[in-house]
Image (cartoon, rainbow, N blue to C red; front, side, top):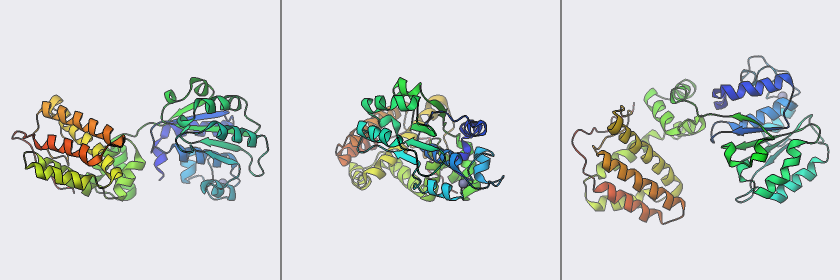
Length: 339
Ligand SMILES: [Zn+2]
């Protein structure tokens, strides 16, 4: 099953559009990354150009209904591989989608496509359009050339100019609940239940991320990281400095580690403040509310510094030394092995 299949509401709207054949000039697929927005744009473009015969029970038909694509014909395969001349992908160059990219696009739309019934222009990360670029696009969104439609992909409508949003039909992609993600990982990938629940929790509603975590067997890293951090508490400062050196070796890895540390600390705090049960696979070093609040603050500051290209090791040392000074109370619980 494709991870997009969990976006039932968004798919139902798309299936409805395909069924009626009233294709909007412009669609806005909004929602956080990792939910399948770009694949939905591709499948939509495939459906509009498909020339194959559809199998009623295929994955595509289950997602997009009887007018969904076949996935097999020449046109479908070309679109899937990114080689269909009528499907245009606009992506940022450097930091922005620039105005000259949009002007070049509009010039090229003056010519009829050589191939395909329906031209679809997909704007990836549409929020990275500069204002001039967005303004240059307005007229085309309102009156696209015959047989052309636009799909804009962005995390949230508020990140786009209101004049752009008002010309689009918005379809929202929403984070999936943890239980549905865990069930999917168990059924589709054979992940053990405990690990599936951990990946669902760490993915924060994104099935794609959960899948990647499962493929990387990230549970081993999670267990090592949290066990190590819980042990630093009350130990020799030299241990904290050594760990800072180890963790700062890869910045990309480190940013993921930090996001996990924040999830862990936030869960511990909810446990202390509201008596919420602590999720399984989380050690509890027994830190107090005040200590946890301070650690969360230090963690946020560290992340900002590292994202802003500060020296990762130094920022991490500050955080780990602060953690090392916490002694915790009794009543904590150690790590439970992952099943
Ligand atoms: Zn097809």
